[in-house]
Length: 162
Ligand code: RBF
Image 1 (cartoon, rainbow, N blue to C red):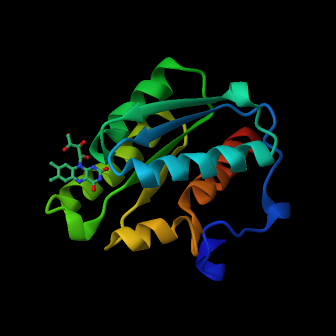
Image 2: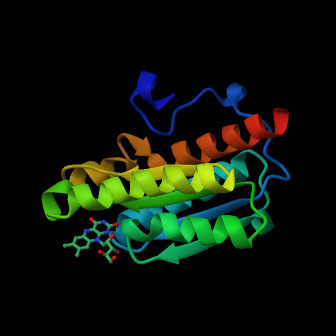
């Protein structure tokens, strides 16, 4: 998908399972919300494009990407979702905490998925600059939210098949 075509919104539409009836939680970091709300818009549009109903998408907000794992765990453990999509943006050039936040988010999100047995998707941009973030939030490189939504659908489908 994105690795081959270099655009986060391009994928083989025929390789995406029908998603009607699947339920998704989306956890969105409010930090850099101009970017993360665009990621969320992309994720919702993509889920709906593949058959997910509005009522089957629940959106929740956390302060920053550091809180994404905890937010994802709350959602996974207290609501009936098939997968959780975490969306955030940490810009390297603008935060000395970059590596702490990115590592905590990546490790935490991985652990929540393994602990709850519900797919938890890492839809976090980690660019060097604001412009690189814009380019991946509905800009010239597509939208990371679209890619995260497709990953979520595929993981739910995989779990259902097994
Ligand atoms: N959260 C993000 O999602 N992206 C960021 O780029 C980001 N930069 C931060 C920079 C600093 C200096 C601080 C203190 C926090 C930052 N956060 C960022 C927020 C972080 O994820 C978390 O919400 C707060 O540290 C509170 O736990």
